[in-house]
Figure 1 (spheres, rainbow, N blue to C red):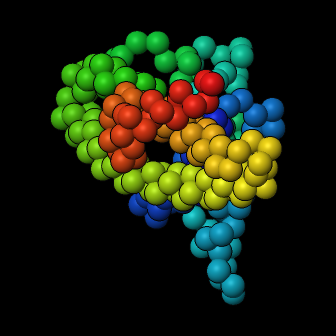
Figure 2 (cartoon, helix red, strand yellow):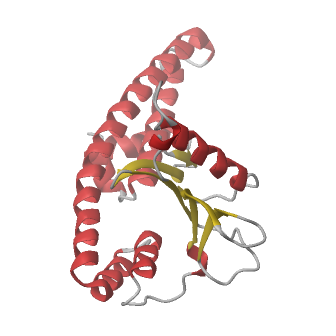
Figure 3 (tube, helix red, strand yellow):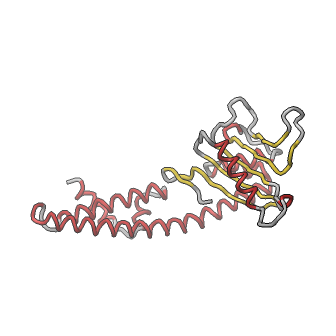
Length: 245
């Protein structure tokens, strides 16, 4: 399922996996959702029934596990960061079916790195926002976490390059479209502003907006962004000066 975004950041990521014959849905949820309990039941049920083909018997249904990794508190009265929900008889707690399992991991309740607790290590790995935090997890987790962190570094480098190229291409197309619109408006104003003045200001405005957006999305300094967009420092300064007139 494609990730949802809010203000340029991932707010939800949903992965469906086949692990040792089991159907596993892994969801990372950043923003609190009031109906999340109902939603995870719906996703679990949808995944559970998706393994049943026409004319198959019900016993062919796979064990289905939903794993929800939350960056907010869902169970206010629980101190444990990991909660598993199962289907069980209410009075005896006897398991009704082992094909039903929903896990919740509340990252805010994971306080310290525990080298001997793999679940805690993975939570800290997912929580990590900085390279320093990733390095701490790598040092505490041995070979397994070292490989995981290295994969993040490799994917980050390749992914940023591809995404940056895609984003720049789209942005340049958007800018060209905006510049055409600005040019049209400039000609329509014509003598009122002086031929070419309207389109020049429109071009300058869109250029500055493009540069600012690129700096925000890439977290790169101005000089690198200008190089990336093939915009000279002189052109940028002229555009800025024109807008400030």
